[in-house]
Length: 338
Image 1: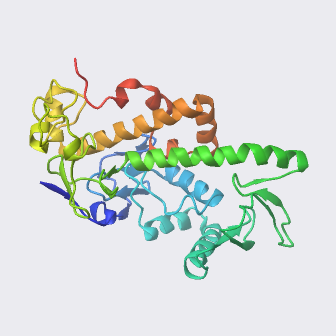
Image 2 (image 1 turned 60 degrees about the horizontal axis):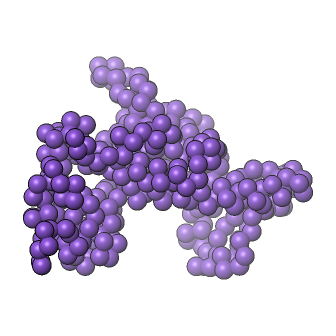
Image 3 (image 1 turned 30 degrees about the vertical axis):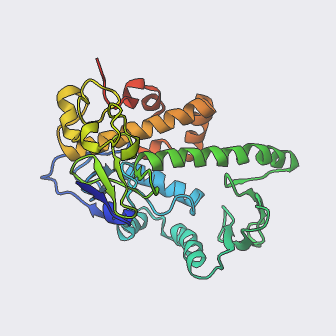
């Protein structure tokens, strides 16, 4: 019987190692862009046992640039595969090697101060072009534009897209366009986050299951549910059984789309797209879930808008997906029934 813990971090440990491979080691593949990582190249390796993906220096640089553009939204740095936070020490070593340290510190100080020095109804707002900061209250009407008071800067910027505002006409463009950008970007981030986790349908505790079966018992509320379909035990379709149970829910899953497998690794026998290893099966499952979520967003906002958001923020690329992956219907099918 699988269980969830009350702390999602205990399910997926946010730890990462920085590896500089020796010439004797085989070439590695980046889990985001799938490019080869040279044996002498510096890379980050996620040590979440359910992931173990590598991230090449090119993709790390993209993450760093996204962080510089919007520090609060892109920190901590996360593995593109499982969204596990990288170890800060490892990330900082890369940043130092790439000569970004001063800019990194300028972004990190406001984040630290915001956690340690501000009241609950306050937040820091930083100029995208210099270290200038202001404290704003969160219960007031959100401020979209910032007039930097730094004597060497003085730029007016849009806080939603971190771009400089040229004139009044440009400001009107930002006022209408960037609010929508911000809203749609949030939708995509939520789709990726919910796809990489599973929520208890009773109390909404989120986490990832262990290597055991798909029968879940929530450690917070004690509710029983199916990890595969996400339904409560009492809501399962079990031949009009007055008292549905998880075991009966697994019967005939190979032919009944309303039933679910008890073990993920057994799906491979029926659907060859699925891996054999249970950890790889779990990754495949959550990849399908995420792509289904992203396809819903694609239907909602359209391909042109999704492309534009990805070009501006790199939000799809950073997670190792592509627009073609999202559009491919086969990628969204959990089990192919012939």
